[in-house]
Length: 467
Image: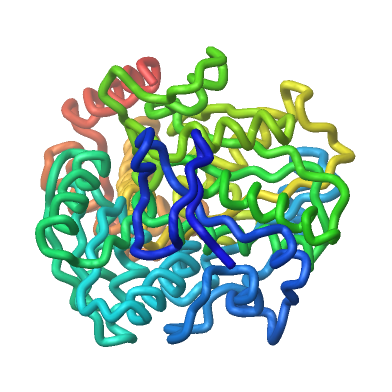
């Protein structure tokens, strides 16, 4: 029914034992089902990942945690902001471990159990490791995860709580992949890395099936790219729907990468077939920090076939998009996911996407897994708190610069926006630092600004000129 086929030279191999590269040319392999099998295959059961079991390589022992069947949300407020009539987010954060990689994990771990493996190894930027660790825990399989030095702490925490064996190797996931490949060959462990296991493509193509059942076929499908596998997998899903006779047109595929790590986008722009970076990659969107994308050629092929496009966005644009998605739609997306909305805004401004088009953005994972945004927001919160304190002290000094005043009088002049106790706390701190002094008059305690206080006000003024 299913067999492995080279994506470059079309050489064919048996479905098992599992292999990921062509013995003839070294290119990636993918699973293929003959057209007759695909045409006959039916969607069976409730709206979950395993509804599409008959369109996947054969599985006997299903290891499931209720993955798939994720909502396709019509986002009205963001759509209004960018002038679109129909904008949807495919929200993969609703999966058991909060990312799209649960689709890969359920199929990969099920296959490992079928084949009698007791240990699985994978290299990961985070989401796959968290997913595989959870599903391995579910099945009683040992999970060995190789991670680069830079990995989101939220994802690492998931791996740890699921009792994965974790090894740090290299600066980026490209380095970790080499180590995972060595470990699989040395130990005989099952290879679970998304780049090195063709089942990952099969798992992610189900996203296309679900979108078709939810809203039909969009005009555009936008996804972020690391290795390029996700974009190709979803495209493959749409192509299989055509073979089944379910659809007669396709969405245009858009691949998005961070400006500091965009080998596939650069290859697309330069019209070359081999995406790879010669410089050191850099982005806070760690989920797509991949220097040499294993599925890069396949992603480029999908973009070209669909008459789509590829674009890059800055980390600043990603961060801003992440905040907008949360603020207007209540979805906390990880940076790699937010890149899709950042790219959408860019493509609308460039006139590539028409405001009448139906667009789907893939939200691959939860922002709770990515610590960069949390640290930035925490830092901003502290800055706001400190800023408020400085602002109140500055206001007190400016009032006293014009006229001596007592505490209750200051509280009224400040608009009663804080408690009187807080005002006296500020006054005590200003006195302690020599910026104000006090004296008694008519039974009241008056405060007056000192020479040091006047210098402090001038410093505030100079600082505002600089800013």
